[in-house]
Length: 189
Image 1 (tube, rainbow, N blue to C red):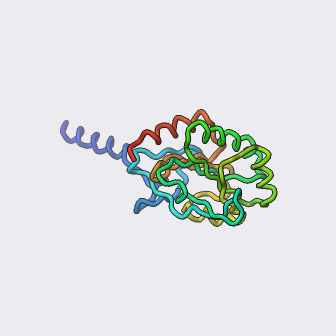
Image 2: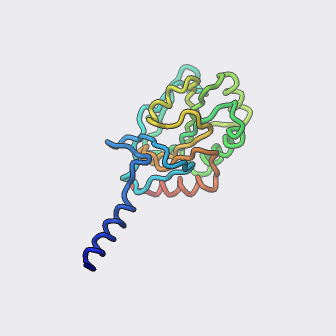
Image 3: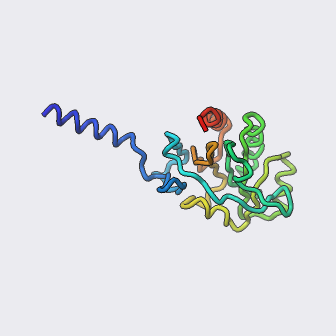
């Protein structure tokens, strides 16, 4: 009887440590499912992370050019969804610039539901140097299967293999982001 109780406890313990279907999808690709109202979600161990593909679009900073994840192979990428019309984005953008400058990670924005002149002024007025995909209709977000398109600002942090290591469905704090990026940069490629 004691052996059965120990075996049941071991199975329950292992089940508690297993990866749930709350966020990372099947076949190695990222698919978001809202896990019980959480606003900050991390994915560990690295093998449990889903890869993001197809994040590319028209550059906000460079007319006629395309920018996307493929421009940053082997780099930790902070993917930030923002709009010039978004109040919290006004505070967050300079902080993200600071994170990029401090860590060497790449910040790539996705500017949604926006007017190009307003977005360009927003970036220029705040001395932002990281590029953004200008995605007024939100088509780029379709590559983030299941991701809430109405949550702005929000941020995904991708490891060097462009697998989702963390999702922030709220304004990001530098104090949370810098240690995460440093940890991801130290992981084996």
